[in-house]
Image 1 (cartoon, rainbow, N blue to C red):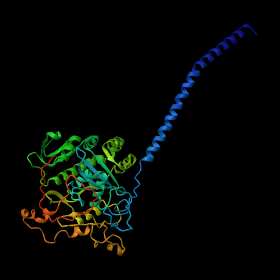
Image 2: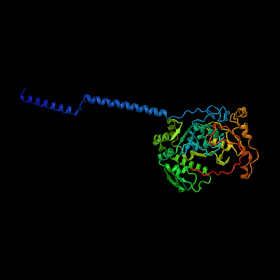
Image 3: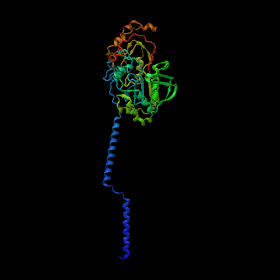
Image 4: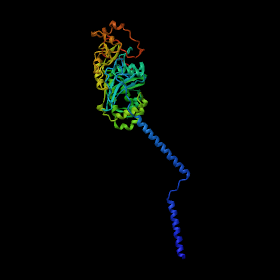
Length: 448
């Protein structure tokens, strides 16, 4: 081998070594032992976090489901609320995917139920009906103050559910009670509402720290303003709604319909979790969080203009034992209930109502037809112990057309009412009707 060839070989070997060094520089460096351990820990943590999120998502999906409603007709044990046999027949069943709710708005003190509504949600047909029960509605109970508004303070939510069921013929599936702060938060959560205030409102009550001032007309309302509008009853000078509390109910219904239009928009799906959180904080309810979310999901997108409808159980008002009441006409109530919130496949045919305008207690008649096809069903006597006295306590003659003498008829004075501070047992047992004259509704002024 000559010198030149040797030099060429060395030169070539040098180039190969240089090229190898360059190749080694392009390759990533192997992690050290410490770096490898850190990488394994990161991957392990990420895997655990992913598995946890998957489990949470699965649990979340499993918990969002409709409630299991197994309540039989007219009560929790297959009996009507007054103890008699169910009035809709043994073959009556529930409508598919049809749920009922009692919604209650509490006052500032938390003892009185300012707003009482029974709602139904027909999931299959995407329809919501709401019947407002005026707070002065008369109920067939033993206590001296027979207003539905007194039911909660007399025995809590269970007693309220029981007394409401005497008016509508069945016990609502679920209940939800909301306080004033919860209503404010809910309205604020949807960005407020644009609402047409029906009348000028000017009311101040320093004792309640309440100040309500609005001009008639369309205007934006935040949560606090919306609350003030629905709480308004009359101005400080006595003017206000011409039909008193019934006017307030109408305004509340219109505002809730406006609010529902925003709540049911598809864009609210993005706020579903936050809305559910607000409702959980604001509501006292027997609904589970997963059930609440399921209902909210099902309601999103409902046509609020045509498929969310508000009604009032009765607008017939008068005086009974010097107190203002709203009286329920049984047949009119049954027509409304059966066409809206009745959760059963057969019509309700009987309610447990005390109406001094007719001088009797309904719900005790043995001649009313029942939904059952069996002939013997209509002949079964009612178990109500007070049905006979209630039906015969008032003479068939009409009261004197002159209001003043009628209120001083001796039989009225001889009846000893129960003390107003004692709600008795709240059992809902019927009391014989008084022959007191029923005069036009003119309730005394009180706080909002």
